[in-house]
Image (cartoon, rainbow, N blue to C red; front, side):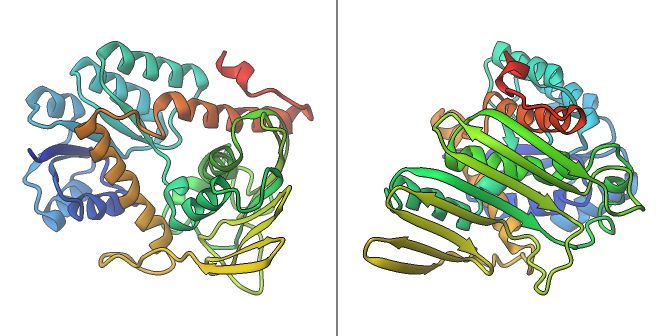
Length: 344
């Protein structure tokens, strides 16, 4: 089949993973790069052998010659770039967080729908091998009907050294990490009817919150807790692992440290190693996330080739974005909120 040609906008810290991922997928080639920083643009172009380089996104779109765009910039530019893609009829992947506001997100979705081209959000955590294994076990009825869950990411890893801007925003952990964990909760236990959240800033050197706890009432009837922290110094540093606990009518499932999944039913406990693959370009401990990037990108290739609806479409991700926004409002006002009301 014809090779899909892509353009990448944004050559920052995480985009290197995206470029490696694209390079390893059959039938896809990144043919153009765009970044306002000349040094980053040159470095990425030389590293991956991409000759077409632009400092301006409008010039990139005007020249054309690509079948999709991968937007790997920070959130402030997302709406303008997605709407630019829509204006040119170009399918787009957009990095998370999808939008600064729900209104921006809805406008982006509407623009792409009007253009008749797909929009997918780069929400990679649900594509991690261990998370897919948890969902597969649940769908297979391994523990019956789930009624309780916990999705936990607790660490003291220094994320600020590679991404110093994370320390500067008024919002931090819910918008950067919690968005992933909340999306996992949605993916595993379904959409959310109501939530209550609490946040805290422990690290005095940052502006935003670095600890958050969210209680979710799922429409399925299950209750779950999402807890995230970058202030937890534990005996074992588990970054970037998400731990999962699920209790069901017929048993229990635990995704434990180092990708050990235990499923307990009436006949005993089964232990499975659900470790992610260490791709040739990946490095520990990041390999879990790096593999999920490639998995998401492979799905995107199939979306474009087969006319599928993206699993993490803009429409779907609005529901996750609503969980983040509702969590901030709940923590501020000490209220229980219905996230669907924010996107109605």
